[in-house]
Image (cartoon, rainbow, N blue to C red; front, side):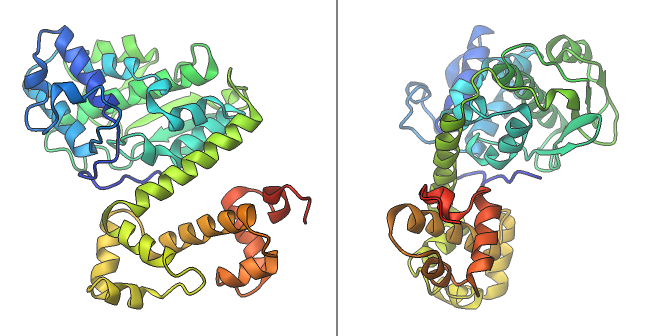
Length: 345
């Protein structure tokens, strides 16, 4: 199960990560103006929740930190400072989930909401749970910047799991796909586990025995409400950004009709091949967006209209009601009656 990353320059995130990094650099005597150089973000905006910033702008601050020869502990200090409470609904949804296994799953599902600098993936084995980072270093202009981002990413994982569990929950092992840097001792000091360098890939490993632990703030109703909010936020992000957003809007404008990919490409004055390529560049596809549209509309119809399940299945273009029920179970884990609260099977 892997996360996806939005386009680098879409301004859809509050500047909380930028603020945390600027703060840590300022404590080292680095002026905020130097930290923010080239971002287009003013110092007065980094604490303004109404200001929207991009992954690219945050990456520019990271690049500035590296070029300014900051303290090598900087990314660890930032990762330790970025508690889940800084992440808004995404953070609260993770803190209220019902088990640490759910936490790991939802961390990937909603990672798009977290100003992601890398994609993340997790795999559960009988004895261990492994975070991997499939595109680490793929888009970084330098090894130093790539390492800076990975160091912060690992520290965030450690901090967030501690926030959710309510106690220290260190990894079993951390592996890095690059040689040990001069400050390698900092890795174990901050991450609290053995750290191996020159490994085949970047991995953060936990003991699978923790997965059934109950988070300190677990609450079934709160978890459900916040996860529904995160689903809406992801849908809103998709409708407001990039080529995927345009496709989403076209499909949502014709519920029950759902033009095919050729027709949508024509409406956007693109060839089908170009549309497919641009969606791939945004790490999505036409079928994935159509699936999202159907999911959003199904929840809207079930919760706000008296339409029968058969009618909704027809409106969403399903060949029969059984296929709709299967899709609904895949999207939500629930049947139509559970979503409506009327006991319908």
